[in-house]
Image (cartoon, rainbow, N blue to C red):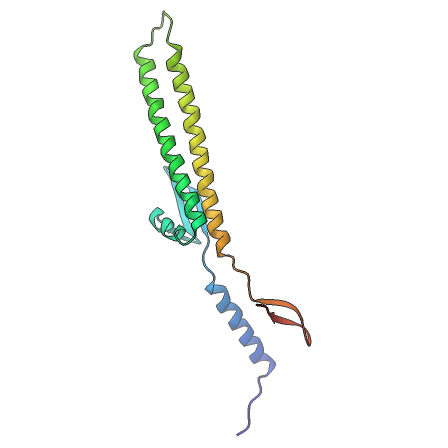
Length: 159
């Protein structure tokens, strides 16, 4: 029996098949878009829930740490919002249009607003850092590089 050698078309087909299969093996990146009430998370084109997102973050310690910080800052923002509502009710209950009003309620109202806004911004920054660190962890260096080999330019396997 004669052995059959591969011609140029077969080599090109094999190379294209290998390249296409390598593209589909890569993990999907996460993106975050603002929704009406909360953020919406997508894994490429597929929308995922926050529970699925946390499950993905559990694979990466750095992302999970940023996510936990985000949840802490979000909780602190909610506490500041609650105190802001309390100061607003207090200020409105003691409002006197013809007399002097208490300065402490105004200071409490505006300071709790500033603190709540600061914690909300910090929370959103930590969410972004969690997603960026997760996406960064997906980028694995390839073992195949185009570079010089013994017989000229070609695909080199590096370890």
